Each structure stands twice: as C-alpha cells, then as structure tokens.
Amino acid sequence: MVKAVDGIDLQLRPGGTLGLVGESGCGKSVTALSILRLLPRSGHIVGGRILFGGQDLAVAGEDEMREIRGNAISMIFQEPMTSLNPVFTVGDQVAEVIRQHLHLSERETRSRVVEMFELVGIPDPAIRVRDYPHQLSGGMRQRVMIAIALACNPRVLIADEPTTALDVTIQAQILELMRELQRRNRMAIILITHDLGVIAEMAEEVAVMYAGKLVEYGTVDQIFDTPMHPYTQGLLASIPSLVARGRPLSTITGTVPHPLNLPPGCLFAPRCPRAFERCPTAFPARMEQGDGHDVACYLYGDRAEASA
Amino acid sequence: MSALVEVRDLVKYFPVRGGILQRKVADVKAVDGISFDINAGEVLGLVGESGCGKTTTGRLLLRLVEPTSGQITFDGSDLLAMRPRQLKATRAQIQIVFQDPYASLDPRLPISEIIGEGLSNHGMKDRRQREATVAEILEKVGLRRYYVNRYPHEFSGGQRQRIGLARALVLRPKFVVADEPVSALDVSIQSQVLNLMAELKDEFGLTYLFISHNLGVVQHVSDRVAVMYLGKIVELADSVDLYRSPKHPYTQALLSAVPVPNPHEKPQRVILSGDVPSPINTPAGCRFHTRCPLARAVCSEVQPALELKARGHLAACHFS
Image 1 (cartoon, helix red, strand yellow):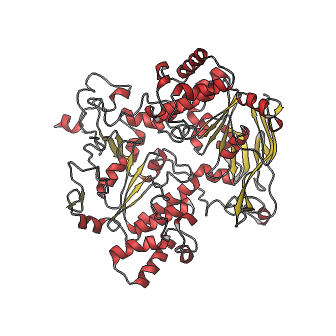
Image 2 (tube, rainbow over the protein chains, first blue to last red; image 1 turned 90 degrees about the horizontal axis):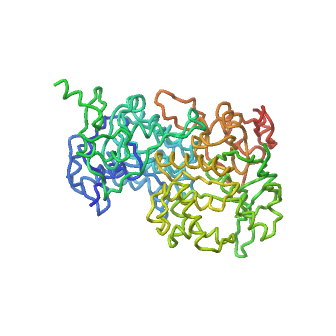
Image 3 (cartoon, rainbow over the protein chains, first blue to last red; image 1 turned 30 degrees about the vertical axis):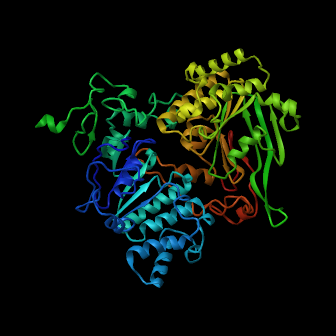
C-alpha cells in the first residue's frame, strides 16, 4: 500500500488563496483529488475529515458529491489537452456543467456559455464556442477549462498546476485572469504547483509537502522570508538566480524516497543537512512557531507547548 | 575568443502537405534566417516559447535535420558540405542531450550499451576497452560503476539525465547541444544536474548551446543569450546585459512574465495580448508586431534587422 498523503491538516478561508507546493510525488495532487473525491479506484481515503461549510466530504454520498463537484467546488487540471473531450465542441463542454447544476433554459444556457467565454477573455466568444479543443491553442484551452470551472460560481477553485504546460507569457495572462475572477466572485483558491515563483505571486498561505507529509505551513511572507524546515530552505536555495550566476547552485543531495520504501522517522532525514540522532526515531509533530507558522522538524521546539 | 560554431542565414522550412495528391500547400517556417556564433568554451543560451524554433535550431547544428538553406561552420569546416564519412567523424565532436530522460534512452538496452554504442560506432571495437571507458564516464557523471548492467527503468529522472550526459560525453566532444536538459526534473534535482554540467564543462573544455524555455535556468548557466520568436532571433547579448536591460519589447515582456520567487517583489508586468501567430502564416514586417505594445505602422511593413544597439548587444527592433 502506498501512503500517498499521510495526515495532512489544512484550512482554507473564504476568498483566500492557499498554495500547495512540493516536488513530483509529494502528494499534492492526491490531496486535491481527495477533496473532490476524484481518486482513482485503487485509492481510498482511509482516515480524516474534509469539512466544507460543516459537511464532511470524506463520507458524503456519491449523489451529494455530484452536486458539489463543478458547482460549489470545481477544479482545473494541468494539461488542458487531455482534460477536454476531443469529440465535443468546447461550448458543449461548458454547457454540460451549467445544465447539470443551474437548470436554465436552453437559450439561457447558451448565452451563459458565451458570457463565460467572454469573461475568461476568449476573443470572438460567439464563434469560438463551436470550436473543438484541437482548434484552440494551449492558452485558449486552459481558458475553456477555467470557464467550465467557474460557470457555476464556485466557492472554492482547486487549480492543479494550472499554468505548468503553458509558456510564461501565457502563464502571466492566466494567473492575472484567475486573480481578477477571484476578486470578482470572492472565491477561495487552492493552488497546487511546484513553481515557487507562482506561489510567491499568488498565495496568501503556503503548505509545503514532502513525501505525503506536510512539513511546513505559514503565510507566504513567513515561508519565503524565514523558512524553517530544512527542506523548504533547500528548495528556495536551489532556484537559479542572477545572484548565484557562475557559482554552483545549492542542492539537496539524494532523491525523494520511493513511497513503498520510506525511511523511518522524519522522511526528509536521509537528505537533510541538519539531521541528528532524533530524526529517524519518529516523524516530528507539527509544531507551532507563532503567528500561524508551523513546522514539522525536531530542530524547533513547540512554542505553544513551551509557554504552557 | 574564436568561434567554434558559426551559423549564417540558417533556414528550415517544413512542408505542409494537403489534398489528394499530398502536394506541398504551405511551409512551417520553423527557423527563418538566423545567424550567430558560439565561441569556444562559452555557453550560449537559447530561449523562447514553444514553437519558436529553438529545438529545430539545435538539431540543425547536428544535421539531425537538414537545413533548407544557410551555412553552418564547425571548427573551421563547412558542416553542410561534408560527405557522410566526414560528417560521421565530425559528429563525434558534436553531441546532444535531450529533454525527456524517459523517452531518450532505449528501455531494452542496458546502460553499458546505451553509453557504449557511440564508442563502437566510432571504432572502439575492443569490448574490454569500451567497458572501461563507459565505467569511467559513469563515475564522471556521478553514477556508480556497477550500474552498467542496469536498464533505464531502474533509474530516477535525475539519474537518467546523468546517463544522457554520459552518453553525450563518452566520445569526448567539443560541443554539446543541451535541449531542455533539466525541464523534466524537480527543482532540487535540477540544481544537481546544472552543477554537474558546469563541472563537466570545465573538466572536458566543452562548449554548450543551452536550449531552454526556463529563463531563470538560462540566466544562471549562460555567458550569452539569444532570444527567439517565431523562427527569428530577436535579441542576442551578454547574459548579464540581457537580463538587466533587455532591448527588444518581446524580451522585456518575456522577462517581466517570469514569476519571481519573492512575495515582496511585484514585478511591473507587460502582459502580452493574444497568442503567438502560426509559423505557417507569419506576420509581414516584424513578426512580433501583432502583440507588441510599441508597434507602429512601419512594424507591419519593414522587417527589422538584428543590429548592434549597444556594445555586444544585438536586437531586431525599429524602436529599441
């Protein structure tokens, strides 16, 4: 059994943006898919709760989930080519979610689709709704995905690497669009990405994940100004920049452990430059450092505990 | 410094065929008249967005793709005039590292054969000698000797890219085209591979053409940087200069679009409208004028030449 995500605690405020950052296989996508209960058949939520406005999504019925998906909580995926259906027009695919949830007349549905296309900045919306996915560029396809996600004014948008497949100039357009739509609809965003630049720009709070565990949590300023976990510090230090030009980049030695062969205790210990005897004993608990900054690392004591 | 590679007016059109007779109906202008030099011992970065022609440029330099027209001189000899035998000998000097470490290694061959294949093709017939050479290069790229009999699926992405580097370097080339060598890797692994590439460059006296869409990575590794847009080089300058004072409006927009990993720095962003035009119907005049915030009438009529705008700083724009 692979523990893809192991004991993650997160909170999302209405209208806020939570960034979920980590490298391939750290469990950030599985976390997001769990919220919408979209895990593949082989995956199960074996414990924990997912509270959404008082309702526990982890145990909600399939009908209730269908009511929520695409409506109150929606999701955009990384690869806009594979997540759109190639044999339906993009307009039909936006209309599908509106028909499912909003129960408008056919004419209202169609005008809502065109309105959504306009909202996400697709030129000539009335014509483009008749296009098939392959007729659109990557950036335009991602706009269609966003139109589908936002068609029912969700309260939460989960964006899983929404710009990773796009060029930087198109990425800038899409991020700007997401920000603007968030302001307008007062929706909360969970942004999943491996790109620390995108996190710095978009997120208010950041959760850093490593091998299925949450290792650090804080505001974006706390994470970037005073990162505490050696993994977060290593990640930030290994970003190439002008300052370090010509000099070797700082690296994190070794590789992410295989999920079937996890080390004992702290999962980062074998790669950690500051590991000591205690690290392989047990995974450190999440410890409060004040002002909402939490870290799971034995280098730091628990302030809340110490003062108690 | 002398130029190891000289490229002049290099053009590559890919025909688009259509109709019942599969006649040529149009051309994809992948690379449309570019010129540049790569000096011995330097790293020239080549950046641009998808479809700008940077990968085709890299492959043209190895003649993995035959150019439509233009000239490539490698180490003083005309690469395009070479006959097969001479070309083969020269190719030992020019190697490539590919982007996707999963697709670029044959899953049915052990590492020893993946790396050793070039050696036997270039005349090292003695198996012992080959094995020793392979083992030696494996150590140079930071892998253990006893890995030689393993197959690609047994390695992680970062290790595979090290194998790709070993395969490129085992023939002791002078020049390596690195096509998005770290794009498929996680940040922590990416920095390991970039450091290794820098070490190997010093040890073997290599020259790199470093192709990437990641502007941060290119900035870190390159001495000079060329920016491509729709088959043209729009700017070419010293790396520090280019990032500090970009002259072409496309370069400016591109650099401003990169998210900065610092929440206190809110960059002045130039958001470009629209998408890159199709390389089949390239715009007349300046290729960038359809999206350029500075475009005027002249831009849609006259194609700007790549000219010297400051010391060592070339740009192709009427208004920079």
